[in-house]
Length: 242
Image 1 (cartoon, rainbow, N blue to C red):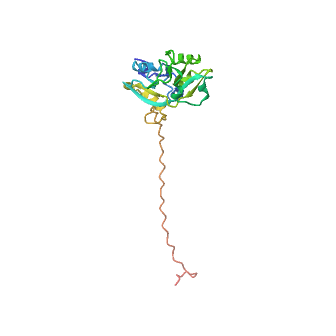
Image 2: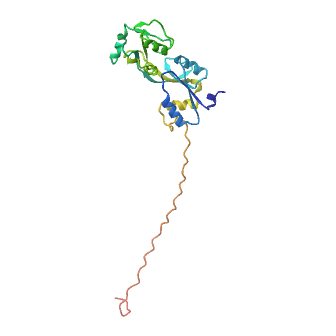
Image 3: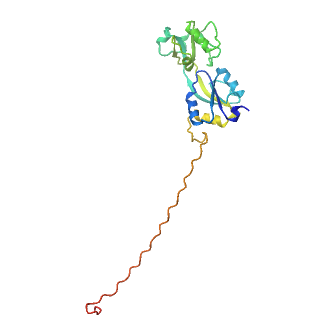
């Protein structure tokens, strides 16, 4: 039985470009008794990791094969074109795919964007990874279209990037094996969705002790003393007044 099955750790994998730090920090503060371990893996390897039981959950790039998985889409990334800083495209704020029609574009084998038709002209080679493609862009032999987070991840001083309005976009999602929705997975889902610790689907919090109220002593109502009738008055001679 693995640590993930016993609940002594929570194993989180994520695709390059995803930054899970804010959620990990909340986990560490909220659930300090269960350590969270992180694994970075190529986007194409994350689903096999989940199905093999090597990770409890993963931040993936859609689309993926969802068979046997539960998936929560989170956010969509802007697609950008990476160019040398001295390229003409660096002078504009944003562009469209039509503006790339005459450009040589690298299409790495690990590309996760879905292209109905690939823009521009195919570059002289298909690099195996995005990192390799970035090196080729820096050499001045072509351009590259990637999610913005990957452009930031592979930032270089001699390169820049610009958003492409009508390009396909990458969506980040949280995925986990549907049959392994453990308490730890539920906890992490709650953190990603911004639930508070006391929410109904968050980690159960200890029930606060109820203070026992000491009953106040009952006040005794004092009955009023009946008024006594004064005796009849007499005159000075001791006779009763007439």
